[in-house]
Amino acid sequence: MDLNKVVIVGAGTMGQGIAQWFVQQGVQTEIADINEKQVRSAVESMSKSWDKLKEKGKFTEKEVETFNNNIQGVDIIGIYTDADLVIEAIVENEKIKTDLFKDLDARMSKKTVLATNTSSIPVSSLARELSEERKTKFLGLHFFNPAPIMKLVEIIEGHWTDKALADELYRWFDEKGKKPAKCKDSPGFIVNRLARNYYGEAFRIIGKEDPIRIKEVDEIMKKVGGFRMGPFELMDLIGIDVNLDVSTSVWNSFYQEPRFAPHRIQKFMVESGRLGRKTKKGFYDYE
Amino acid sequence: MSDYIVLITADNPWFEKFNDSDALVFDMERDEPFEGRRSEYHKSKAIIDLANIDPERKLSFLKYLDFEFQKPIISDLSLYWGDFYLEQIANLEGAVSLLFHSNGESFEVYRESETAKEAIDWIGTVIGKTPLEVTSPGIGFTYPRTLVMIINEAFYALEDGMSSAEDMDRAMKFGVNYPSGPFEWLSKIGPKPVLQLLDELYNVTGEPRYRASRLLRLEANQYEV
Image 1 (tube, one colour):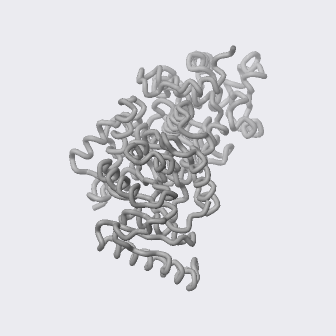
Image 2 (tube, each protein chain N blue to C red; image 1 turned 90 degrees about the vertical axis):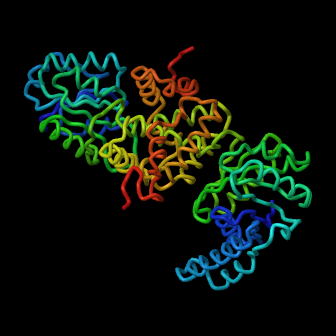
């Protein structure tokens, strides 16, 4: 498989990170957004990042020059219509994403593969209104933040996705140094499903809010388990509200299967405005 | 010679290390640990029980040790409702969790006496890890309990045909920096202890979230055809 031209739609943190990674693989990349300022800022930010990496000796001057030539910030109307792949990384709203994909389906070349970076919307729902031909060329490509560094990309096969296409992309990402993992279109995909109990069980172990036990559980998971962060400090970093939203979404998608049930402590933390590092108060105090 | 008696089953991951230690070690499946040995128990400072047996047998076994020898007991309670055992067994003065392979430098311990602390420190020197003291062992301590839930979910996902074991391992290591993937852990721990702890959690709490996946149960060979 050859990916020579890629378009990333959405110039937020994820879109920018994904675009940066593709450029670093020698792929001509466009980044587009409805917000022009955001696009400019994303391109500038990538450029600064490459300069820093050049100073650190990670890239040569020549490489950075090529990177800067290979990234273009464009208006959504002006994207390459003959791109090999378009990855959407916009707001997690099914209606907005569906409208975007319908528009792309109509405008893009027949060969273009359309992909979503969604973490919570079923891939098949987003493909439902596309042309029959495009449905086979539609799949999920779920990157992890920061995308230029985190190696995983989940390749999600929707109901209509051509299996051979998913396999080709798997091989392409593998060759480029990513660690692809293929999965079916299922709530939370792999990571957001399997990681639920890292948090969920921590709540059941402490039972009630208890700063000593919270610290203890984090210490155990790091010093005994070898995890980089304990569940509570990780929730503080992610945002307790964000974590609760993901837990609730997976739980509801599985028809309230008890294995995924959120815990009342999470809800209480959110209700009392203690959302983690971003509010300077969470399971730990950051004042 | 140390002053400890170690009772161990061969499926304990530290079996060789304890066998090579300076304690009096009995393989519970091979040796006769009690007959004609009474005086050795009475001379010992503490009895260290590292036998991996089903919960009811474990409780009876600890009660037997408690009643027969009246010596401090330190037990591996990785698979059991430790809080309950501590309440039931008068001489149970400490608990450790050694059964679950981990990449960390420490192991979870609970102690109620100075004798238990000394024995636990000795265990630490044998296995080359540092004791990490916890407020209570709860049900299966913290690390094993969290781990079995992650592994169980991976089995459910496998049952659903959601992904392959290899891809799930890869996703958890490279997407969220887990030190191992769920199936890599399983290969080091074995399915039986994972299932045993899930069953203990389910039996003690009655909560359906602890129901083990059928595939895991099959893997653990609980049902023989």
